[in-house]
Image (cartoon, rainbow, N blue to C red; front, top):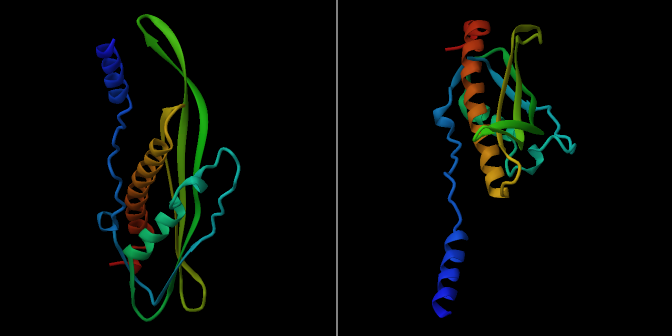
Length: 189
């Protein structure tokens, strides 16, 4: 009986082992940098998070809008004696939707409930001259999504949201480089 109790205790302890998640690091030095020939740069967040059930960026320790703002502050440099760059973060939403997927297991179709997480960024770059006339503009929009099972821990949810934010930030950085070279190359180094 004692051996059986020890065996059950050992199985219980092994089954309670927690898994470790890889650490997500937001390193701005890995993202694109921009140099504008402008005297002044302004970066603002006009996006306001809603407390609607499907919008969940408010549960994150650092919101996607704050992540984009930090990247833009660190990676946009300005030089020059005239013109003004305004960058407006108009959208940085994370939506969670419940979806049902079908998987074939041993010839039988099995329905499984999952969550779809979708992150949307919209950042508007406007370049004005000293008379406040618009010289150039570019709207950068990026969307990325991922799924998870319905029953996950809070740590796993936070990890998924941070990884989604990091990957979306990389996409936003690359798309910004592409579009800014097209629309604002006359004012960039």
